[in-house]
Image 1 (cartoon, rainbow, N blue to C red):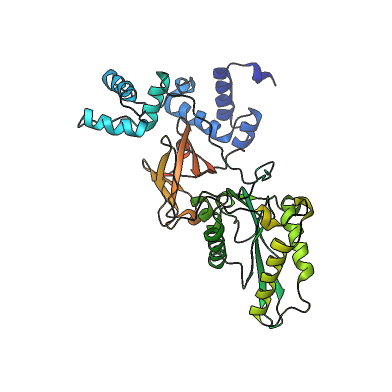
Image 2: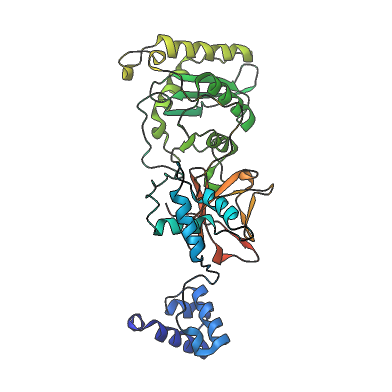
Length: 390
């Protein structure tokens, strides 16, 4: 179209002229000039407030840009260089408070940028972020790199009670860590089974599941109470794509073997049904050779994890350049007057905000990206998280 070759100022003038003529709706006008409604309204507001001058290009620098005086800049560089250990922005910020009492020190981000400009910051390794469905799903070559978990299809016992067998398996060795009959799939009872496994065998690096309850939810990044607990333990939740059970094929193959051994009809007593699961684990782990293991048993290929289950659940930790905020009882964090809704499932959790460009932060929970927030989108003090492009 001809206006694509016009200068930006000419395009704005033509847009305002067409707007004043009132020949089309505002939506159609924006479509004709290939601009968003937000941009169109911004041009109109500036024209009505300042006339043609309001259409001129403006500086994109932040209006609240602060400048650090030379003495503080020099002190930041000096503090970085003294001592046996290399202090980070947080430590330097505390030292500046002592050196310049009564004066607020620069933010940790500003200190980091000053050190970086002085070539005192080595390029940091990019922290791996976890997508909702990591592609491709990584295999495990050694025990405890990856556990897989699933519920074997529910069935009615002879007493008319539903049974949901929860199975947990080490991916590399095929060692069956749990085969527990459950009366439901709620978080509390599932957590108890995982806690027993973690106490006995230690913690894995990752756990792979499907997208069902209680492993996942429709909330932020698909997190659930169970996967939030895993993350605080330092375990990465890994979910297969919907409708792709083949991505957890080893676990599905074990389930077929389990199904072939289930008594028909099902046992009447609940305890009798669990005794059958226990006998299956004994046979599967210690007596049955596995072709993929060179006819060795899973038990002969498995070793417990060196990562012990902690007695106290640790808080989520972040790098020094990441701002940390505690979500309140409504799942909201407050940052410099901005209220950001994180989600009810993440209430009372420590959330990280990593600055990626002016006024734009990536919101994270440990290694999981929750989304991005742009302070310029705030309305009445609230700003929404947008899904990050993966």
